[in-house]
Length: 364
Image (tube, rainbow, N blue to C red; front, side, top):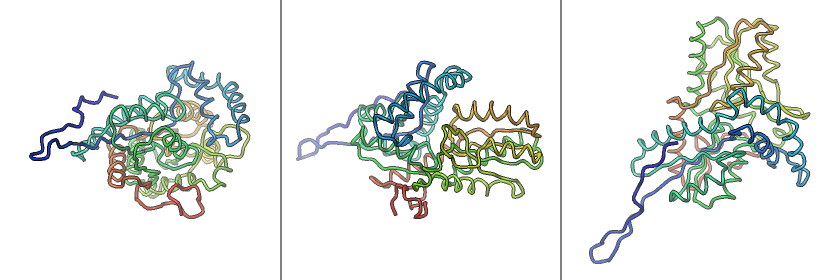
């Protein structure tokens, strides 16, 4: 991310008859939360440990959780290293997030002229950690913060975990966007990517769109986590922007461990497409930047599966990245948060989740 321009600190000037008058300006840190990823082969194991040592991921008490995280990070290290080696040795998620930060800074600064903004990537499981972003925002002189997750759909395992880490690291006044699963510009960004991918492939007939989201254990959903419901809202919003006669399915990827996970899996849907003789376009509906789940799992592992099953075609729409539509969506959210100091809200301002989703951060 480009360095912020040098600016004068709040200044004092004469106030006739009253000595000095202090001039202040609002400096808003926009904190962009994301999962993070190892930046080298040496970082793979500690990244995995940090992930599985998070109580939001594995709820077992300490020291049991510590021992489980040690075991998983050891046993999964070599496979994970091989996957990251396919991307040059580490994850591209931080460079991708930095590009989004730069684009958002430029967009929101054009919209709001009387506030100075700076975006700070805050990664949950690798550098720069949330605590690093909090320290950097304070050093920059932030007067307050906008907490903006790069997880469109809220989950206790992602957004809630990042927000908890922020509250432990910073006392800056903050307004929070908890989710934006069906925000208009967000949905349009995904629809644009799907349609462009289809056209670039020659507009093949009767495509089946697989909206693939990161999976969760079923017991997380059973505890009242709204993630799956919000994924469905995202898909409904994007589906409305696609041709009416297209077939669409929701599926979930990246399952690990022996627990029952939400279904159907992306792998199962590719097998089903093979049986039906259907060509597919995969849309990573829960991801906003490219990383191991898209570049390896979707583009290599599932592409090979589709080839073995002789699907008529296998296409993958890109993540929103820094497309103008998506950056507009983030700028819309930042403006909404700016106007509501101290509030936690969705993209609409109101609670989105039905009452059964008790882990919704907006309460009942």
